[in-house]
Amino acid sequence: MFRKLFINAFILLLAASCSQPLHLLKTETKNYRIEAAPGSDVDSMTYYRILPYRESLTAEMSAVLAVSDQAIDKGQPEGLLGDFVADACLSAARQNYVPADNIPADFVFLNNGGLRNALPKGNITKGNVFELMPFENELVVLKIKGTLVKKIFNFIAEKDGAPVAGVQFAIKNKEAVNILINHQPFDSTKTYKVVTSDYLANGGDQLSFLKEANERESMNLKVRDAIFRYLQQKTKAGEHIVVKKDERISYAR
Image 1: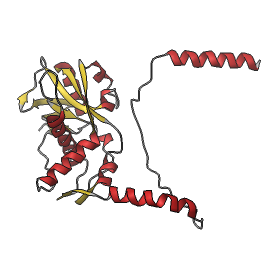
Image 2 (image 1 turned 135 degrees about the horizontal axis):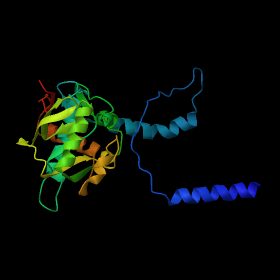
Image 3 (image 1 turned 120 degrees about the vertical axis):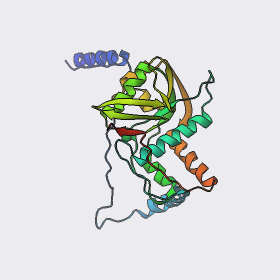
């Protein structure tokens, strides 16, 4: 009997392994604080073994990358944090994306759920950026028909906003209206190049239709690294971080 059950289980596992590979579509996370129990003793041998690594990591994460004149937090339909991260990614695309067809990227869109923590007023450290973007998501460029681009904007409108750069539109009855891309009216007959994260490009956050993109190119750059570069460039130029809402997404009046 046991032998028969084992064989059946093996056949089921083999069949599962031959099916289509699974893709992560949605992640839900929660932070838990881990503390030693009251009265518990510290393992001194372990403590002194990890101490040099902890001190080195603390020093690295405490490195100041830039100074902000304001707290930078999420908001809807447009938020300072979303504007900042999207601008950082668009800046990276304009500097680092080398298209085979010599056509640059048009705009950026990300998701608010991927932005995990606000940036503080004052010193912004490397650790702050890791808290903002703890994931290893990379930037990709999708070549997408205008009809599919409209689905992106309507998806954002239904969600009451998302981080975008290079575009401007209003939300009316959960749909995107008055769309401008690079200050030009949206044309559903054109093909656009969209910068986003590989997580979204793979269909994450209920964006399975993005897998219909005509072409996909990797920028070989993590979203977090794009933020690092943006902060460092501002500091090198002697600038503080200042983010102002510009109504790139608004509610139709």
